[in-house]
Picture (cartoon, helix red, strand yellow):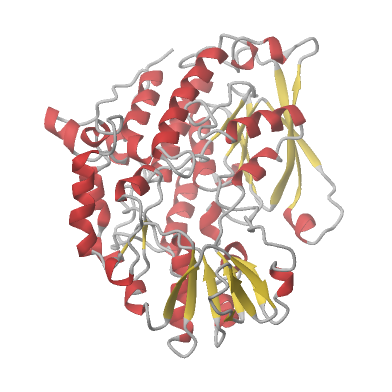
Length: 514
């Protein structure tokens, strides 16, 4: 396998896993990371951010959490230490080029090749490495040159295969559109930043930034709740933080340990049997009826209009930070609005009857444009169009990894699950086994047909694009079948049907030989 270079873009969770598994198969990985260290999105998070899944679900199959981590939901510093230890343990650091920004990637087919005529991915029915039809060029520069707007001095690397591990949650912030003269520029007496910029400040600088200020946080997903909670801690009831939102999502208090319940009711084979029945069934409706009174959501009119299971199937459930609900109506004020705009001293609202809100700082927790980031990493307009067309649907990739019409390339970590680490590890195993020649891909036509089936599922159950959270066992079954592994990992019929699946169930996964 020596001489077969695999370019991996990103040294977050997926990038580390990709590096480890292709290295084990004898390939030569070269990882490009724009940050000075490993960790991806975990390198810049609010101080109070913790795991959204229990550490048992967020664990490498062959590298358990250290005994020193007692918490069920480790904080971001503990997660970073865990990821750094993993990279050191498996000797991955020598393969990573830190502070290296990828400008673009470009594919060069062999002379005389017409990719549009290919019936199979990569132009061959065999493994893509046994008869590659082209090469990828990865153009890079120093991260400092980009940040400081210096001369780029690009450097080009040639590889046989590319694995994109750039994720969806970072890079390009999503800034809402505003009516004329009501955008952030109108807020002349205050400051507007995105949650990405807040997280990049570091803990002490972020505290100084909000201390003594009237802060308004826009959004109701996890980052918004974390940042609002931090602002409330910094300023108390003297300067309460306003949390402005349009839509509600199920956010469970930290002390409820929800994944014990979720694992038993949603993350096993039995629960997956219900997904294709008309409606959501009385069983899932009953769950909401039982859960809602237990949560402080009803007290503050924070029960979403949609069912609990809808957020499960779209990976939208979050765990609220500690003491978040205790602070409501004190150091955290809630405000719902269909829309807002800026004026000199703060915010105005679509409902003209609602008075303007004076504020000093507005923090936009409005997500990221992960699709734009993925699109523009390609130099080729053709490949940009391919990936954009796929991203405009709810499912972008075959097995959530491969675009049928972009050869010798995979993307890992773009679609979500309830434990992205665990899911990325399964994908990297599958991909490494494929690169080794362990199995062959279907034809392009067959892959696209399979993607359409997944699209039907996503449109029916997932409100925010590619999320396999509620069918992760069945999804892993498909990967296991491709690799020739036994997909049933439990001991006994009832355990197989009723027990939640996690990383340790796949610890001794042994793909079949070619």
